Image (cartoon, rainbow, N blue to C red; front, side, top):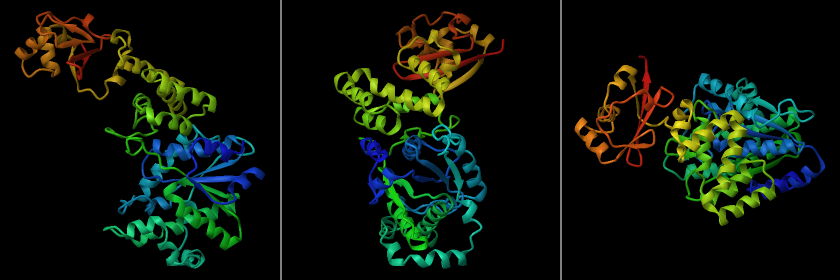
Length: 423
């Protein structure tokens, strides 16, 4: 199968320049995607272009991941309604360094003859002088041509307008494409559909400067069926770095995928074949309560990003969250599950001298000891998932999980985590 056919079946092609299919059919293509270093980690919104590069590499083509150590100092106006906050050179450089290890999960930087490359456009943009850039690149673009680009037109029609800094971004991205074409024989640039104007401008610049043929392919901008931005939750952005989004929270993000979205995400973000995905699609219709498609999606993407060990931990913790026994769980898994639950620390000696009602009050589930006693007597309090009704019973270390934790719960949702320390 032509790799373009594969991308189209997976719904990953929003638009493509003429002649791209024929180019894939007759030669090994070098393709690049640009990644904006606006944060210290990539996020799940970056996964679609990363997977596009990875699929090309598996089909025998050569991928380039371009990090914008130069363009990141300017900011891309595409898809933005107002000016971005400019980052310092130090912040951009720090963010760039964090990307390589994440990309290695998807791209093979040692494969021969089509090893992936990671390049930084700071290498050629930062030494570039303004006069040199205007003379050699700016002369190939009319202002009328630039004003016709959607990213520029949208900003001109708004209240904020567009600065000369961001207006020039199209020229810088086009220049990147020209440099990669000349240095590495790159003939395909990919990106989100909001990048179409920038990408085709790069194709034009290559044609005008060196007479070369270059192509563009844009991916759909991923949204949920509810109309919200993909990769955003109530807790914020879902990051690929485990220190910013834990593997457990990452797993939960995919597990909570809407039935209407799960088949599309399986095509986008996993290596599963067509027959397997179609079988999971049927399962969504025939047995939606089993959530087999969501579990498969969460498992495949978490393994790919975080590895088998973190996947195993996330699944164990998930089993606890969805009705598993707290007694059977490892303390570390419980800390994953209840990471967002209000917590406090108490000394072992204080804990074992408390009554159940006092412990409930100290945990913060009641405003007074009297209220705590009434809650317990009425059966509204759970200790490690089990109802307690004797408000005067003394706590013991047998009431702890692994000798270190206690989970209190009031009603269906309100929980408190108590850590037991010392003597």
